[in-house]
Image (tube, rainbow, N blue to C red; front, side):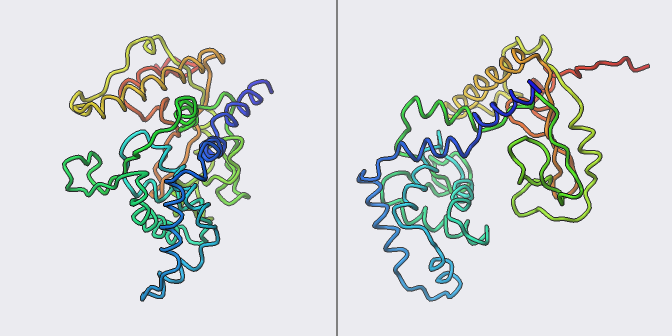
Length: 300
């Protein structure tokens, strides 16, 4: 029971909804950038469009323009560097309350294009020499306060679980397993891929019940698999940030008893993936090497 209580506290701390609220509260609604964005969004919403499908999408937006401006601001300020615009549009779509996620993503991408004139961020074409993401890139021109930035960086990814993950149960139609507070999560990766057809939940549950621990290799300095992958100052900074956050995760797992479990899910093709970023058995060579089975057995 103690491990389960610890896990609940960790999930509450790392919950993306909590940090989203913190970022939104830090935004000054009267800042000139927000007021400019509100004007741009209102203009975008009040125009008449020749495509009926686009007009219907825009007319169905239920939020006020100021609320949309604050949501866009929060989504962009959560970035630490240039990001593919698709990733930001997808994040926005979940907050715009569209019935269709695809409609939400389309509208979010349009809103991002419209609001660039506010000066909050810059959008780079794929051909731009300053673009480092090889597709349309978006880079913030403002930064969060250091204390809030630290909170955001700490909750990007849930660490492995200290107790057994919730079982995936057939009666719940491929939902409800894994992390304790994620009862709506699907066993199938990808927001558009969930379905209620048969999945081999027994196999996933077997994997989730295997406990893991960190070994002495965790004391070695983490290095990239390929040095050429960090060949720019920005990429090196991103790697160093990931390594620093990973060390904190490792330290916390060891302090909690050095026994943990991974949540597992299927992709739409039926391949199994352990969930996690800083600690994952399907990660880099270093991340694989630092993991052992907690209950070791001799294979003869």
